[in-house]
Length: 382
Image 1 (tube, rainbow, N blue to C red):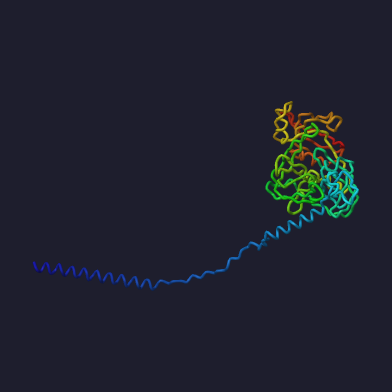
Image 2 (image 1 turned 180 degrees about the horizontal axis):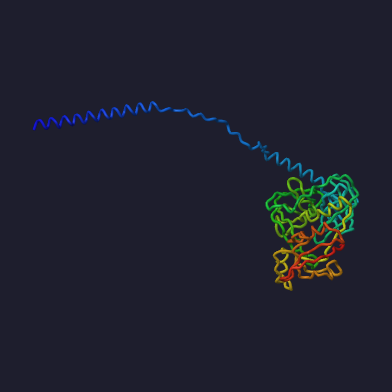
């Protein structure tokens, strides 16, 4: 019995001793293996990352304001006073006769003496009016072109080497852009007043009631820049000085709602007069509406009360003995394009026709009910 216990104890001792030896061998092996591992130092090339963005000069608000002020000051030199009545004094901006003169505003658009304004300021074609420049010089003026529907006119004075405004592109204007209006509100004491605002809306149509007659001004620029009596005919400009519109009317029953005529409509006429001192106005011989006028027509009773127009120009009337009279064009037709140029506003049509001459042909795509038709027409002289 004692012998068995002694053998069992000896076995345990051997097992423990064997385990210790095995653990020692494993530990030695691991230590030796770890020391034989070759560690390599990784080297990384580093460099400072340089921005490829060019340095930009950030203008302070004060510097930017000064630039705008310089532009406006330069532009006001090209703004003129206009009156239909001649003053016996030294200037039509005379304080003593401001009420009688019916003072308005215009802008110089060429170095050889062409002045752009409103027709209601200068009078219609061949009318006489009187111009005072910023330096006080006075000139007799003759209206060489005007359009009652647009309320625009161009007057010629006998002057040379005048500073003139730069005409912008009114087709690219955006609502919310900053604009400035310059004009001669009320009279002498407030001549060349500058007001600021934004473009509030585009392509506005307003209805005018004059002498028991209704008319429409379409495709106008709406602005909250203050426009007062006497501002008519003055420029609506960008901060860079480019003219994008001619101020014309305001809503008297509300504040901050004024309108300007987009400059693009008159640019072909200005360019022709500047370069050739002549402009022969072509016409189709129609009275037409675009879709912005339709709500006004539908609000009245009559044959047009159910008129639906999404695109194009609606032919309301054909002028008797005009270019379109006795042609395939009929009242009620919708002109969708002219010489492949899409039409959606009356100014689209006018602007294109102003680039043509009397006697030239145009091709119009028209819609009559469900029928599409192509009509060739020879332009007449207005």
